[in-house]
Amino acid sequence: MLSIFDVTGPVMIGPSSSHTAGAARLAQVARRLAGRPFTRVTFGLHGSFHDTYLGHGTDLALLAGALGYREDDEALRDAKALAGAAEVTYSFHQADLTDYHENSVEITFHFSDGDTFDVIGSSIGGGQILIRRVNGMEVEFSANLPTLLVYHQDKPGMISEISSVLSDAGINIGLMRYTRRARGCVACAVVEMDDPAGPELVATIAALPDVFSAQAVDLGDREDRHHAV
Image 1 (spheres, rainbow, N blue to C red):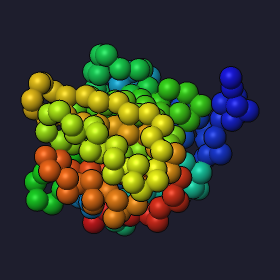
Image 2: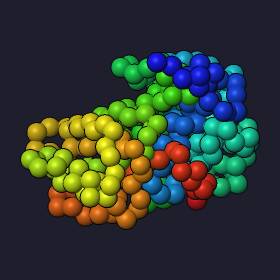
Image 3: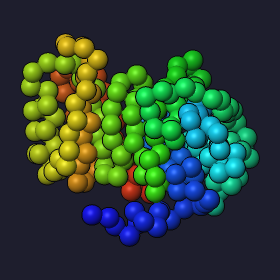
Image 4: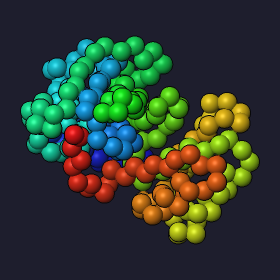
């Protein structure tokens, strides 16, 4: 079944739902996952994203999204000036992300302490996106629902513990995906929920034994802009 929004596309600053709106959403999600101010951001453009990014304004959409602007904000057109005002440097280059959709990008945030944070995502049409990799960990989520990423030790009972905390908070799980790099190493539970997990709940999950970190992403919360410094 298709919604009318699947046909017409999202409310956005054009010209393209895939190359503009989807690009902005990808960068918004990546910024929220990065979770802290950055001084530089680089964009590795794959396939059609690289071939047509200047004509479609993909560069402006990605940069604006990384600065915290939504796909329907007229400020997208002024992304480069806004980055300059925030003292954020940026660059775009061609990337070969062979196994990913042709409208894919690798976004790397650079922090003042020398650390980096990397996200790969794809714009799959109509403003819809898929996040495919976070800091080297293979994942898959659309950010259409509030989403929780929990990094933990790969051991029996972890999924049950995470689910119990959410259940006790009255949050229903719509979908859970589980990935790991190798048996017994770091694993990631990607939980799509009917309702968002607030900061206190995320902190509770992050404090569970054998949990390394927890991150929440909710593009429906109209979060205030979080410009990098």
